[in-house]
Length: 387
Image (tube, rainbow, N blue to C red; front, top):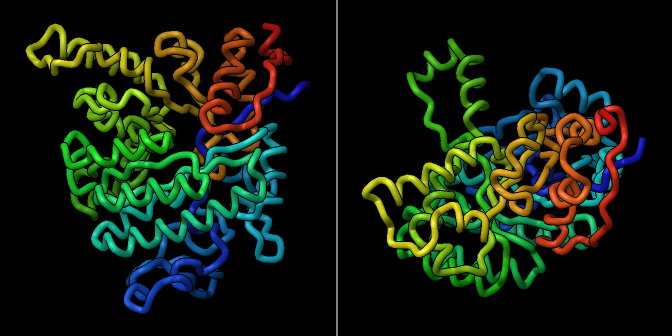
């Protein structure tokens, strides 16, 4: 059975997998006790924040239970070799790409740090700067196989500086962090940031963030119904950034900055046809015309894309939101993703797409956007393809 060429448009470098104490080692004296650091515990080394441990436990250990963790354990993901972790060792990560039949990955970085350091913007901005240096060095070890996305601080002036710094390092994109933003993204205070993104031609990203969902009830009540609450949050988490997509569209950011490309990372796509249609309705049939010359859906088709993973409705929805506006991803190394079974996902969920469209979704669009080497389309083989 042939392997389908693919690039993951949404993969990750998570803090627990970074093997060195890079932030404390680089920190000036006044920040040394305010940044994440590694400590030794009875179960192994663990990242901590000031005053509390990092979620997920010791490095190199599964962070949960279930069939997805079992699949990753069986594939050898948690086999630690001389202190080398698969996500942050280039050789091991390339091996895992090969296991999944991938030619490359787009790397989102240290996602949850903004929530943990939201009350210390100076420390957060410093951590993001150190991470820029770390991930740019990592990517340079295999530049045809990796492209990095780095998070931005919540202050507009700091964010502009980080954008320009990232561009000089060869980083391909930046991620907006709503939890730490000092103002909503429709506010005029962000205009210098949009200018900087457009000037540098970096790709602008939001990423799915279940931390944006406000849990209901007391902590005790939520813990008593933990499985219900976790299933609920996981079910709606992909749509958590709908507000921010609409903000940049309806406030005219994309109208004023037509060279910006906006990516909705790990949001999945099946909810988007309704959302785009609803925005169009609100500005045409209701009394909320924003004065923009195009419909919201037209800005989507012109400047926006989204990534999806293991979505049964994908092939049905893609024609509705544009084959050029969708990119597949495996979400490695998260257990919510498809590694190392991505090739089966292609056969199960994308076999009804024609060869050219499937190549765009799996490879061509992300390669063009982030500068990966191009490859020709290929037929999808196997029982699902022949059905």
